[in-house]
Length: 229
Image 1 (cartoon, rainbow, N blue to C red):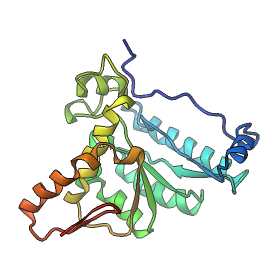
Image 2 (image 1 turned 60 degrees about the horizontal axis):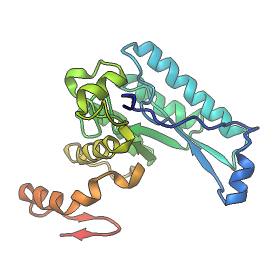
Image 3 (image 1 turned 30 degrees about the vertical axis):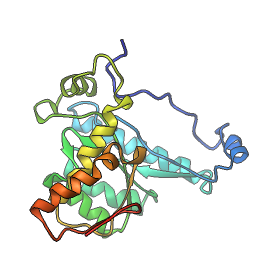
């Protein structure tokens, strides 16, 4: 039985003396961008600890980026679900730490991309015309948003005791999050990078467009592969 935890990857060495840099050269990797994977920086209900951890990670990423700036970049994390602190850190990360962009997770404590409470953060991204990387994480129900990451996984994912989240839960949570932004005002200047090929969303796309057009017959949807009128 697999451990019911969302984290499944081992850390890779990073830094100016990173022994992996020569390997990148050998295999043709020009540049890599550091970011925080699941479960992010919200590890407990102690928001002071969340803010401190987020700040430490942002500073670390900025320092790594300064050492070999042509080889390493940094996507800054934000201290969500503290919306006020997250809004403030957008400017700090871009203007002071020179972050390349930001990483958000498919949800943070049951806050998905389309939730109105997140709009102030997304509006800050839009104003700066930034790229936002969306990384999947474990599903979270509002009734369990204050649980630990492992507890949230157990209560929100029926097969949690048997499989690690990245096996398939991540893909479904990406789809949940990507379906949500339609509930927020348009933010045309954000470019989203979606990890793992948008999860299961591509296979649901045709049916999704048909259902959305029931509410909005004039809907126009475009992607690199499909155009719907």
